[in-house]
Structure formats: structure tokens, C-alpha cells
Length: 152
Image 1 (cartoon, rainbow, N blue to C red):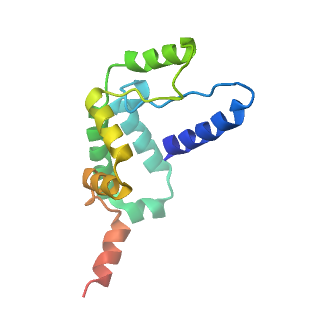
Image 2: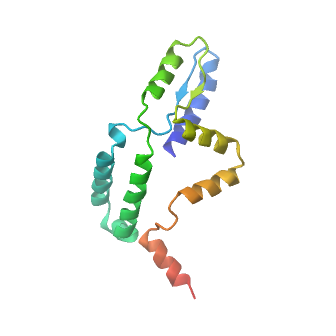
């Protein structure tokens, strides 16, 4: 969500700054392995956040949800690319090109292809794909309880 917000802000800023001849360039890397996306670091941050959250909220989500969330996070982290030079190349081009692109999206080729396809397909197709990719069975405990209370 925050990447979408940053992208929307950058697009608006680009339009505002255009009248003064100032170029605003967005570099939106898909997913790269960095110290911030290291599995150990991310797991530690999730655990720290879990311990600091209100106990009532922890109870509503439940330990099973947290374990599923960690499992899904590990799966995502393992997909990250180690080709950091792709991001650096985009920065270099954005800074040195006479006519740089307005947006750079460095990504591992298969991911880049998928991103392009999802961008141009109808939103319903994108939503179905994302629903399939996300773990739909990992629900907070409170939602599972509500569902069972509403069953006949």
C-alpha cells in the first residue's frame, strides 16, 4: 500500500514540477534482498511488533495467524532478487540520461513480465490472481469465530 501511495505522490509531484522544468523520477524496485529484507531481521521485527501490540489484539489474531503470517513472509522473502545492480543501474540512468524515464521498475525478468501483464489486464483479473497468490486460509482467530457463529 505504501508503495502505491508513494507512486501516486510522485506522479502528482511530477505534474506540479513540470512547469518549472524540474524532472521528478520514480524508481520502484520490485523486490530485492537487502539487509532490511533479510529473513532473520524481518522475523525479529514481526516478533517485536507482536509482543508490543495490545494483548486483546494478539488474542483476536491468535498464535496460528502469526505462524501463518511468518510462513507467508518467509515464502515472499525467498523470492527476492540478489541482483541489486539492476536498481543501481536505474539510479545511474535516471541521474545521467539526457531524457530519463519518468518511472523505472527494476525487477528480475520473470517478475517484471508478470508486473507488466498485471498492469494492463483488467483489474478483476489482477484481483483474482492476487487472491490466488495470497494465503486465504490464514485468517485471524476472531474472523474464524465469527464465521463459525454464523453457520447453521
